Image (cartoon, rainbow, N blue to C red):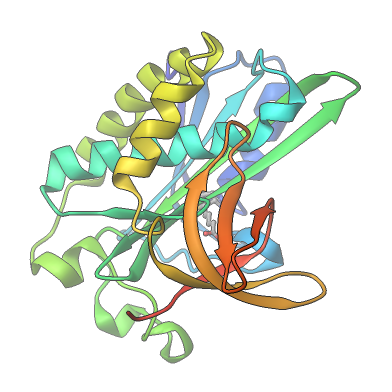
Amino acid sequence: IGKEIVIYNEVESTNSKANELLKQGYPSGTVVVADRQTKGKGRLGRKWISPSGKNLYMSIALKPDIPPKYATLLTLTSVVACTTALRRYTDIPVMIKWPNDMLIDDKKIGGILTEMKIEGEKIKSAIVGIGINVNMTEEDIPEEIKEIASSLKIYRGEDFSREILTVEIIKEFDKWYQLLEKRQRKTIIDRWMQLSGTIGRQVKIVLADREIVATAEAIDEEGRLIVKLNDGTYEKICAGDVTLLRA
Ligand code: BTN
């Protein structure tokens, strides 16, 4: 990971750029970093606020040697790597919210958007896009998301180096990605659970056709969230929007 690192001032989205480079023949593990994005993408078709000079926007282009069944695990692996790097560099107790949000005091400071192309029984390509709010201030955060978003700087009151953080994430990513390719799924899931602020909490989950309130119990081998409903039954959640409810 990171043998090739390509740095831009401005791109539409580092994910799209990383995908282009992979198609042009750049190797698996190529990292794209940009100072700002004009069309930063979030999960579920949302946009990702990407001002210049403040935050970290990076994408890692991969050709993962894992069965498509474990595709979600790639995102969990990525969030474990990022959270571990963030904790080491900043000493802030960053937590993970399923599947891939990074939170401080229940406010989001980072997220991951994985875009994959699957053909038959192979993952042809995977772009892991990482966005972290590093030095954004309250003024930089749009009114609509002030309640739910934050940054390292807002929490700690001081600036952090995007460069150091980028290097730390690449190092950590390299380590966890190797474990994934070596099928060390339990190690990854155990670490995810350790870093998770979701497990044990009451959560509200918005699914395509309904909403449920339940207790988050665990994640399984394929990265699905296992929740216990109030009637004692269990459900496995593959995709959806999770809100942590206050105790
Ligand atoms: C989320 O919705 O939580 C995921 C946000 C992912 C944002 C990052 S920023 C770098 C990369 N390029 C994009 O366009 N999106 C991801």
